[in-house]
Image 1 (cartoon, rainbow, N blue to C red):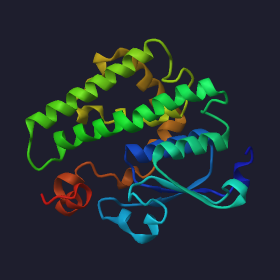
Image 2 (cartoon, rainbow, N blue to C red):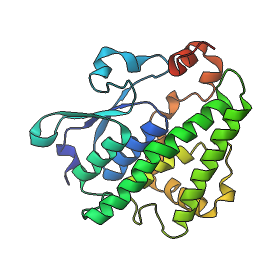
Image 3 (tube, one colour):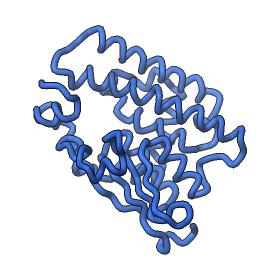
Image 4 (cartoon, rainbow, N blue to C red):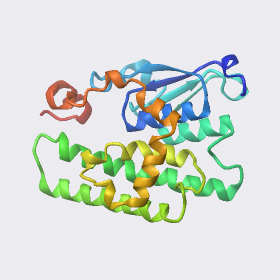
Length: 236
């Protein structure tokens, strides 16, 4: 694992979104070679049969490791599963003892089951829904604020979510990046702000966020009706 050049690159099926960033950040932190296969979710490329063989839930990110267990290729979908696999393969950012693993898993699954879905809903109803629904906007904005508060309280007691820097932080950070679009003010969460600024300053995190930046159009879903229909499954 020390000779990165000798390793076959991980194939990453990716689009520059919070869930995609989780994996580019992890790969950069682990110094693992990887090659990007862009999946343009606004064009519906996530529904192509070749991608569905890797990710049956038609969601990115997904990976194929040519050097999987036993020397055989292994495909993995779901960002949390990918993060755990990469960290265990690389021997970093995931604890070796059961107690440490449980703590990381708590915050990793908290992000996958809570922060990501709720932040995504807040982002959607505040920015992309074809009609403004006050109940939905308030409900999800308030829930993201509550979840930010959960992180803030935890980070008052620990430098990182699971104690040491880990894949739990790599999972949560990308979903805090678009905090303004979620109706949040990080200055109301000083411990979260400190954590956010610390991660943002890490070179590997910066590199991970830059992958595919030229393909990211923040106005696309405002102007591309077809992309909205593909992503949200409704006529707009």
